[in-house]
Image (tube, rainbow, N blue to C red; front, side, top):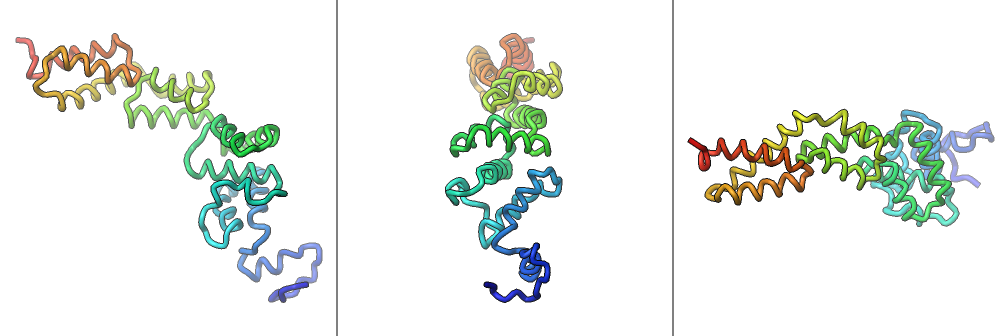
Length: 235
């Protein structure tokens, strides 16, 4: 029962090779599962296998459906879990805890989820240390968060305390934290012309406090900035 392959294949033990080559490697079967198996086996080239998964799941290069778990009732649970994880990682970096939570939402068996995530960690696709360092850098630069604010963000993302502490120690210095606070205050002051010193102090302290700066550091930076402000410069 054949569609008439372009070239006969005398090797009956490898029925997919002839048709796959004849169709340019885009057969309806094999691409999806093969890409995931290579990832599970630790093949570094398969880090980009999500594109192959997409091509195998659909007839166009569009991403897979939102919920792969609903596609086939009899699908291999490990393959389904891997597809969910790959989709999440393609969208944005994730911590292991975030991925565990997503798999739980998709009703993946906890043991299957653990095995899949262990394998993803082994091949470097899931790495909480790298994720923590990336998050600290991005939140520090983009939002100007201090240590306390950064630690809160790491906890929200499910990064454990030890990993979070190591990332904060590596990425945040006292000098850098003060410099960032000074930048935030200087920028905010440009929008506060005409207000009296007490009002400015209160608003600036509130802004720095929300970003995780200590009261001692905040008031020191604010006092220096206001002393140099032409509206409040002391003769």
